[in-house]
Length: 303
Image 1: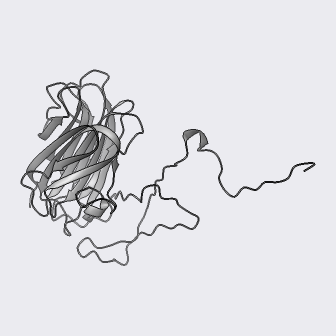
Image 2: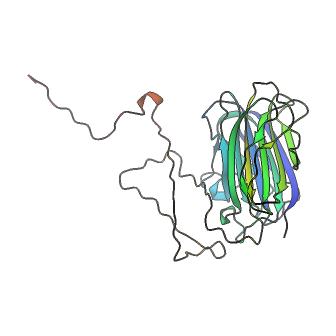
Image 3: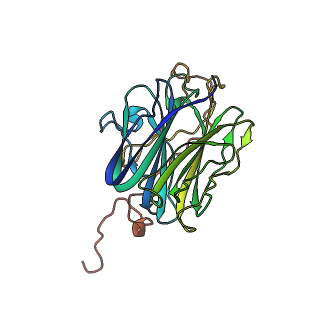
């Protein structure tokens, strides 16, 4: 089955700690949902801004506990608009909420598609072949190049502050939803797509219109989505957040297993080539190079 656009939805907030949005119009069980969140006035290296639902929030909030995966995240190079991209394969429900880790002004746009590779109706089946991000400045912001295979769905995403003309559609792409938080010059998010006709890197995907100013700082992202009937992927990127503020004590281990995307059962004879675990220190910047461990008071001379 070829990809087909289903519908979209959007919502915006100002100085809020969460955002509520409807599921894309016309969404059906098994359809892919791509949700873009554009955060206004955030700084460099400030994301992510969404607190994933790992089971502590209600079933309306996005996160691993409710079948959502963070597909991409990028902070602007300075004060500007940052982006988070989340995805899910729809099962039930009519709304989706995102909890923030502080108060932000933000806009979200969502798009629904049928035809993605999801034999178990899960975003973890490997339907996302690739995801790339970029920081952009000024007019005609480009979404980054991504590797795609013939008949993949390529989704170009923008989060920026634009003029009243909005982002516009990149050449060969269809803009599906493009919404500003509160008119021109506020955080704006866009989703555009095209089906790939060749295998290889897409090259930059440029949104043609002007930003609010030549120095406006924004962010972009590009996804490549496998179509239904694809060969079972033997490798794909998976972002799986650990519990917030988890302390890794001595002896902590990470367990990785290969499972069949068709049955969900472990598969023997599979070699997992590389596993990357990324951690962020919780120490303040001026303390990051300090050694930690067991310390003792030693009596000095004449004690």
